[in-house]
Image 1 (spheres, rainbow, N blue to C red):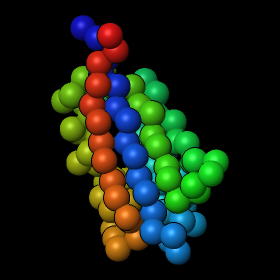
Image 2 (image 1 turned 90 degrees about the vertical axis):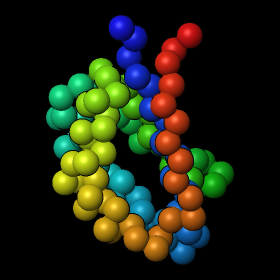
Image 3 (image 1 turned 180 degrees about the vertical axis):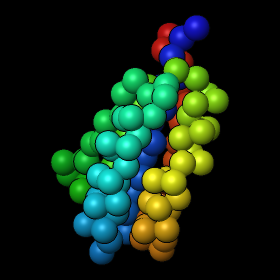
Image 4 (image 1 turned 45 degrees about the horizontal axis):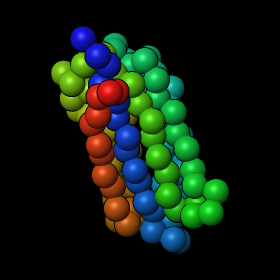
Length: 95
């Protein structure tokens, strides 16, 4: 079975970049410890610092869904309420 690739693009409101970045950074270590997480890397756009992208590799959709229900994701959602311009998740398979 192929791994599930996830690209999560988060765009902060221009006056909320530091707040969003701080909340995103808190997700990295606990997520990397989760079952089925092979890779979880955060990137920030060089020309548009309000744009963040997670590149993720997961063992399965079920384990990704478990991650999405985790306490650290719930905390992130609460900490960034009203601070995001947009948020998109794309689930992909390598071809």
